[in-house]
Every structure is written in structure tokens, then in C-alpha cells.
Image 1 (cartoon, helix red, strand yellow):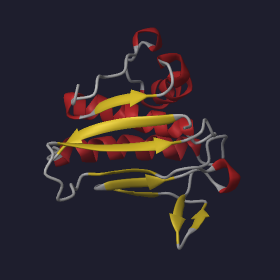
Image 2: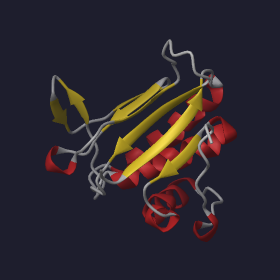
Image 3: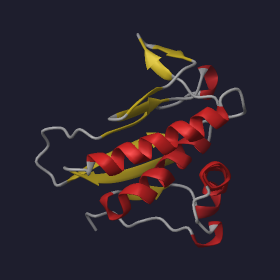
Length: 154
């Protein structure tokens, strides 16, 4: 199947907390530009070396052969009837995985129980993303104690 991260979010998200998460992600991405975690997004079926980030959405992938599936979270919700919206991103452990992990950690920090995060990996596989968030933003996460959520459907 491949190395994948999963998340659930409710129909409604607090727009201020979502926007605060996006601001922190922008800081992390400004730190990674030109470094070993290049990200881009799909435009006209081609991956370009920029990412899409605004106060309502984030959309990115790895660049070229370092890309896999696009990571996307929006504060908008589809017309789905379910309370929890499921989404995932298969990164195949490619370099942009560190940025995907960092984004999920940032969303968890700001949204708390309004986002449930799971992964095919172990918490130790998230060390690079956790370290990136700590180095840039100073979040108080203890890498040894980081745990994944349970699916809200369990």
C-alpha cells in the first residue's frame, strides 16, 4: 500500500485557529525553502516548485520524482453527511514527508481534538517533522511522548 498519513476533521473548524495554523506553516515553509524539504503543488497536471498556501487552505507535494500524493487541508467541508471528514496523504517516505508531518503537528497544536491524526509509521518516524516544528516554532512537544490519535469511527 505505501507509507501514508491519515486524518479526520469535523464538518466545522474554527476559522481563527485554522488561520493561526496556516500562519505557523508559512513560517516553517519559509525556513525550509532552498533546503532539503522542497515542496510544490500540482498545476495543470505538472508539479511546480512552489506551494499553495492561504488562510483557508494548504496544498503541496514533493517536487519531481520526490513527489507522491498531494497533501491538502482546507477549512471548507464537502457536502458529505458524516460528521468527520477523512483524508490521507501517501508520501512513500519521500523527502516532503517531513513537511507533511510538520503540517499535521501544527494543525494538531492549533485544532486539538478537532483533528485526529494517524499514520502507517511509528511516532519515531515523525522525529524529523517534530524537530522541524520545535526548531522553527518552539512548540513544546516531547518527541518521546508523541502519540497518534484513534480514529473517531472506532
